[in-house]
Length: 139
Image (tube, rainbow, N blue to C red; front, side, top):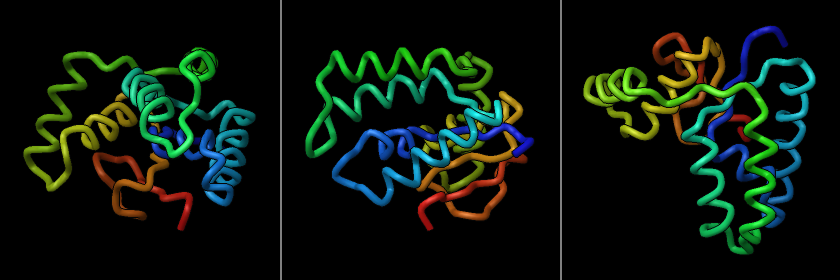
């Protein structure tokens, strides 16, 4: 694995969701392989969404202290900081496509960080957006 792999929030959430054992196993294996290859990339948006989702939206949410600990561990990985330039590029992408602003922000953060692959289940598997290939690891 030589190209950078950007992880959308939903893939990381599945890694923490014991109620989805098949997706959890897939997400954990993929995450580990990208970390081991030194090819992982996240964004500050992903960290924020991860914390909110695992503490509020899971059937069995994580305790805030555990979620914070997990988020802090993720924060030591390479991160794209969501800047005004990334936000503006996301707004332009959302305006020229059918993509939501939040999904466009994920794509633009991946592109800004030099990632060639975006792992997500929220976008069209196999499509390429702004040079980033969308891969749904659960198909």
